[in-house]
Image (cartoon, rainbow, N blue to C red):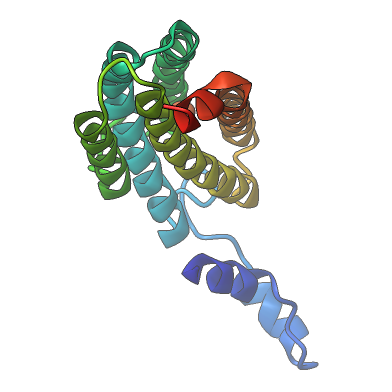
Length: 201
Ligand code: FE
Ligand code: FE
């Protein structure tokens, strides 16, 4: 990602001898009231990406009850129920993060989540109600969502750390761990009985 280059360029020590003098000037933090990075391009990019995952979580929270309704096994339905509540808490965590950053909590359409949810609806349409193939398909769709969230929170957490937003980084890390746990829970449900039963249908 371009950010790696940006970060690298900022942190890479200058090699030339004259760079010592130069760095005293150029390494100075961006000038703003807090002396932090709030006005930097990277910070703006970070906030924009937070708005993206905010949209994603909000729409996922609305979609999960549909997943639950479509599920065949009560075990999978319960997993979706639990994840609906957790997803709502992810939205609240993001509200808290926007507050800490003194930014307005607003959502920006996440094309990736929109596509993943569309795909999930397609799976529901294409599979027969009351079958384990339906559940296997729902797990596939849900795990794609979890992996997208894991990638997003993992990166955003590192961004927050790089910018010195420790509290924000800790909150993002909490959500990240929760997403990983959901992914594991979905794998367990699939391996317990769904895949095997789906194979014999
Ligand atoms: Fe989430
Ligand atoms: Fe999730």
